[in-house]
Length: 433
Ligand code: PMP
Image (tube, rainbow, N blue to C red; front, side, top):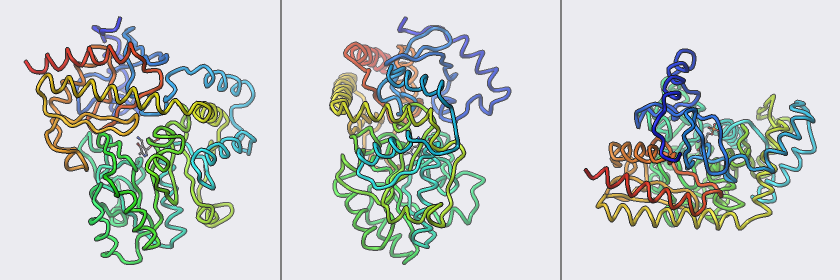
């Protein structure tokens, strides 16, 4: 069952979806625009596997773009959600569960305060509003190819789907908003220094993915994060790490712990909800004193701290907290994928770069190091497309864009690794023809 041959039902569902859902999807990267072909419609997921509407089975290397770090249908998470659904779905009022989640997040990450929201977009949008309110400044520096969700301020030279579709500066964002977002190449401290010099006393925040994951995976070069931290300290700028991807994935304390650099504000999403629609932003108490209801910076949410989302996230985080060995396990498995892929790409004579940090990994078909958005753009998309579709036909579901990171769950075991490398060998052999 592992080699999918038929996707007739996905095809007819996509046709039907297009009638009432723009592009047939509720989030653009799902549409397979850059790799071509019909998106696959899924109906079930279990452990490391996805099952599509045509009964094909795939090893999942997306894991809902990161949240399913424990694998699909993790029993403790499922039963916690079931139990909570029978108790109460939503109050719009405080619960003890929210306190438990906040305590767990603060304990694992070392931050002082945290507020729950419903997505990574909301987390980043709220964090920069808070930074602006706190500093009384307007401008924000972000990095080319980094993605911080789809709020207006971030759709300037953004990564992920907007790069995949070639729309890094989105229509609909006013020129006023665009002017307040300054951009620099990732991994380039000199460019950031220049922006700060050119805009004295005007920069409220620097926001960055600590390990970029939305132009493929790009780890920070030695000293880069430390350099950003120092610049923020020197100029009274709020340092925001967008840990939506890296949070609770690279270590219990995320990239802050893994890289040994602390931010002033941190954004979370994905793993923090264990598969439910959740985000959070947190950080220093002194900054959070400025947010409503204690301070004047407004931020709110009807479903924020929703009990179903909170138990899903809390159960996931508690598992990770109680089983810290999970991190070594998924890192080791991803390292073996890297080693195996390097051997195969060498064997078949491809030019490539593999970037990896912990359980975040991506392959670029190019012959220059991928350290920023421009170098990520050097990747050969035709080769990526062939590789993606070849792997899909072998029952391996990779992110449908070279600008995305693969996400590994702890359910990837020996047989999944073996099948993935066996499939890659066949696909690369075929691509040479
Ligand atoms: N920040 C980063 C680093 C992300 O990767 C994403 C989503 N991929 C977001 C923010 C936005 O999160 P969401 O899609 O939940 O709004």
